[in-house]
Length: 423
Image (cartoon, rainbow, N blue to C red; front, side, top):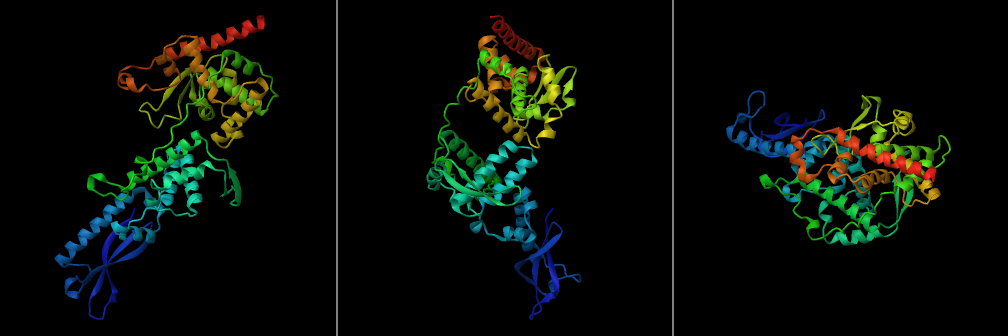
């Protein structure tokens, strides 16, 4: 907690007998002083050297109130500032107030990580590093992110480029990045816009007329549209191929195959949620969890309860509580899965096989083969329909609907598999 208070230092007496009134700034148990334009003679001071002159007190109180308001504006940034840096921030005039988008961005990433939002933090960090590479500096004034700069920045992102990053041992390693595709460029520029908007929300206060970031480059510069996402749904025949694929016990392919099938059996459960599961998640033969991708954005915390069917049970108990021993991060687990699935895809002739395919396939089969309504399929996939959010407040979730969808999709897979073997 930063505090600021007027003080008069006894040993700072001037030749004319006056004292310069200073502001003592205390932050993280460290102190610095800010000079003022105010001077007081001994008649204007009490015996303890506090100011008693009403005119001076009025002027000082007004100025300190402005400094305290700036402290409130800086809010969560305070923890990242040394006391002298904070003093510089406070004494900057509005006309000369400079916002470093890189410094802010790194603080913003730390805040996201503290909130458990790694999926948002990591792309933002990629943008920050890219801006440093593009400008050749670790400090970039936010005014340099403008509609004249963005087209050149996009051309830069399209090209193959080399850059250096610190590895886990603190050593510089040179990497080569291929030029971004339309999809990659859309995502990157979208994340830059997210960072820019976060800075505007932090430093602008429209209610009080405090606008420090006056420009908005994304009003004139339109981000390239994202291309249509390729359909990731597989046919039942392809899922049977994956289920029957022979793997070496303990191999990455086995892990990928069994996790893929577990996801499919459990209504398209994400790899991150499988990684996070614990024994406490299983209650009365049901798996209860909050979907990590949307739990921070939903009032119901994206809670869902899924029946632990016989097909899923042995796979779940094989890996539950053990994945964290094998992989320190869920992102590493996900990379291993997709590498294993790529190898399975190459062996079975299934192109672009990833973990996403399990979720997409479950939803598509439930809708197109089993003829469930889109509402029921969405419920089983733990989606929220924006058009029925108000209605959902009044309706108690009936997990039996999900059980029906799950049962018919998995039963259809089993039936087709038996027909194939019989044929």
